[in-house]
Image 1 (tube, rainbow, N blue to C red):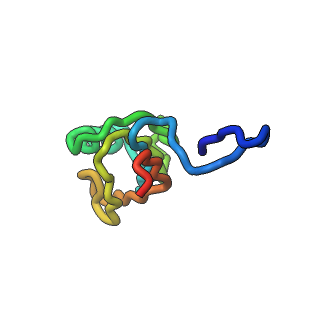
Image 2 (spheres, helix red, strand yellow; image 1 turned 45 degrees about the vertical axis):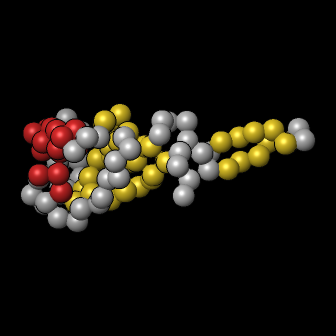
Length: 102
């Protein structure tokens, strides 16, 4: 959200201070292991995305949902089965911050 003054009152509008484009995706799979997460991150990088952040992974390999922040000009497309090279993984897009307001 971007904010700006208008007659001494702030205004709000969609905006992005995160770079040209940042997408937040969710990776869902039962008990995501470190090896699986590594495979998925490598797959995202191979596709041309920059992984800016990861949240939700647990070191005991018990996480069922991990969120990843991607920065690039490439559009990530959600995948409902065997996403990012891992059997049983599915991805959804949680947020898409794009400076190019179409």
